[in-house]
Image (cartoon, rainbow, N blue to C red):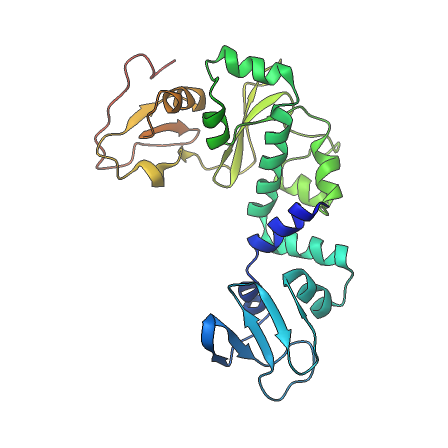
Length: 261
């Protein structure tokens, strides 16, 4: 694992939140937003364990041990460095896994000419829009190996739906848009046109960000939305599968020539 990946992991998991998940309780607060409590790493009788949430670090004045969230997981669970990373990733849940997947697919996009060509055919040429929407590409036959090298188990990947029972990537030859708690994959080959991870409940894309706009443009799909983003519109959403009804109290304006493309 790269140093950047380790830094990303430590930034994604607040040390104080992880400590409290292990039933640790702060005894008092001190200057700078820091907290003191009994040390969970040795038999402590008075608060000697210092936590600095701003720096995401800890130090015990009793046993002299300190470090970041990875170091704490090592000491607390008595495991090796690599096992501590695996445990932290599992503790952080699906959100962290999908973040890793999204970053991987973003890297793959610019390594495969067929994916870029497909985006150009759909009218998407602005790098800023592709980056803002975090569009990626799933070539297939490579995600499983990369994720297991990060510490995820094959069972974890199969449970989420990223890998099938035959241990093959379920997203293959697809342009990928990350969603909240899911992934949308649009086939550029002979596969089924659309794919989501199991359990997707549908809804409206980025609804929480556009719901307060005085006017909202509703389009049919993600590529229509991306085209309007490229044209400078951000008050855009699109319906995703299983969206039973439009939200109430919204004044819709359907963009001419976009809805139903």
